[in-house]
Amino acid sequence: MCLGFFAMLLMVPRASWAEKVLVRIYSNVTVGSVTVSFDLGSYNLFADDVLLLEPDLAGGRPVQCVATTEGVRVSVNGYEFGVYGKVSLLANDTASIMCVNPANALQRTYEGDIHITAPTARSLQLINSVEFETYIAGVVQSEIYGDHADIFRIQAIISRTWALRNIDKHKDDGYNFCDQVHCQAYLNRCTRPDIILGTMQSYGTTLVDADGNLIETPFHSNSGGQTANSEDVWRSALPYLRSVEDTFSLGMKQSDWTKVLTESQWLDYFAKKHKVDVGNDSLRNALLFFQQPTRVARILDVPLTRVRADFQLKSTFFSVRYDSLAHVITLYGHGYGHGVGLSQEGAIKMVRQGISYDSVLRHYYYGSQLHVDSAANSEYVRGYIDNIRTILAADDGNPNAAKAKKEDWLSLMFRIRDKVEREEVDDVPKQEIESDWEFDW
Ligand SMILES: [Zn+2]
Image (cartoon, rainbow, N blue to C red; front, top):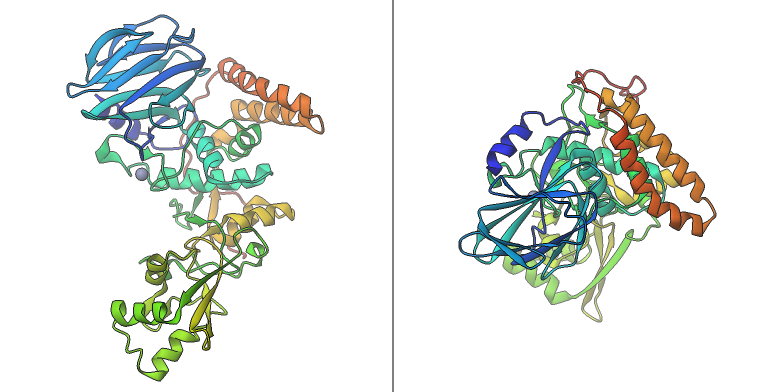
C-alpha cells in the first residue's frame, strides 16, 4: 500500500511544486496514540485505502489513532470505527492544515495528508505526504534563523538540493525523509511569509557541479573563520567542498568557545585511547601546546574529528593553552559544527552586508553552479511571490497590521493556489544554467 504509493512518487524525483514527498514526522518519538484535528480545509478519512468517513472533518471532529497489536484503532469524536492496517487523512484541497497532537509530544501543524500505521503494538508511524516545496519551506523554518528573505532563499536552495539528491534516503523504510537532522529538520509546516518568500524566490533552484549533477550541500552553524575540506571530516575530497577563509563567521553567536580540562584528562585520553607515549617530551609538548592558527585535520596522528566526538567539542578548530602551575589546559575553539560547506551564521552576515545570495553560495560551495527550473518563471510562482511581497510590504512598521496580515496571508496564499491553474512543468536539461554563474571565483 504505502510502498506502492512511494514507488509512484519516486518515478519523478524532480523539483516541481505539485509533486509530493513522504516525510516521517515525530520520527524520534515513540508515539503510542495521536489525535489529529483540523485548522483549515476538509479531510476524508480512509482505512486500508477504503473511504471510511466523508464528511468535512474540519468542524472540530478530532480523529484519534491508537497503536495496538492488530494495527491502528481509530475513533472519531469518541466513536470507535475499528482496527486497521493503515489510517489515512487525505486533504480535499491544497488549502488544508491539520494539527497533529501525540499523547507524549508537543502539537505541530502540517499541510497535506497523513498516513498512520502501527509497526509495533506500542508505536505509530506518522507519515506526512506533502508538496515538495511546502516541505522545503518547513525545513527552512526548522533549520535556520534570520531576518532576511535571502538567507531563507539560500537555505532553501541547499535544502532542496540535499532533498533531491537524497530522495531515496529512507526508501527501504517506505518514505523519503525523516524529520530529524539525520535527514533535515522538519518540525512544523512553514508559518512565516518571509520564509515562504525565500523558498518561492528560489523555486526549483538547485546547486549542481560542472557536469550538471546535484552536489552535496552540507552546512553547519559557524565555521569559526575558516571552513574545512570535506576529506578532513569525511572520506571523500569533493572539489566544491574546499576549505576557505570565512571572516563572515567571526563575531557571531557561535564564533568562539572554550573548554577547560585537567592536564591528566587530556594526556590520559591520548595515552589510553590512541596509544600516544605521553612520557616522550616531544609528543607531550605537541599535545599541551597544540596550536591551530588555520585548520588542520589531526593532532599528532589522531583525527580531530575523533577528539571532537570524544570530548563533545563544538568544533575541531581549537588551540590549547597550558597552565603548568594549575595543571589545567584550556581549549580555545572557533565555530560550531563540522565546518564543511556553508556556515549559516557566515551566510547570515554576508546577506546583512548586502552580498547577493548567489555569491554567498559560490563562497561556500566552490565552483558550483545554480540550476534554475523553468517552473521558477511560471505564472503560479510569479503570482505567489508578488502576493507575498505585497503582504510583507503592508506589514512594515505597523505591528497591528502585521499581526492581522499574518493571519490573512496564509488563506490568501491558498486562494492563489486554488485559482491559478497548475501548469505542466517540463523537465529542464541540467545544462541550462544561469549565465552569470561561471568559474570566475
Ligand atoms: Zn532520516
